[in-house]
Image (cartoon, rainbow, N blue to C red; front, side, top):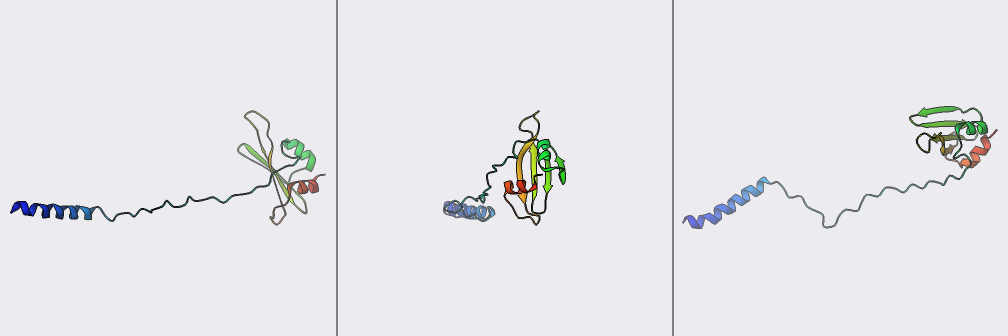
Length: 124
């Protein structure tokens, strides 16, 4: 009689232990699509400011409205009635003198404008 009870006991133990494992986590049949980052399109900067020293930029535009140094970078800001020009300077390699590596231009209310046009309007 004990032999007939053994399968029932084993089945009962399996059910009890299975309940301790918690609910099964369903797995999707297909992997979710990879999260895509939005593509940011940035205009190519083709202007005469890139590669110039801060002194050369100062000779072009006069005294900057702002001169901010943070870490290894420096920003000069020039402003006029129609636009604001930010020129960023970084050393191209260790030990080299910083040069203009990036330029942003915007209207006084924050709308982007074309860099070369803004630079031309600010030149002295």
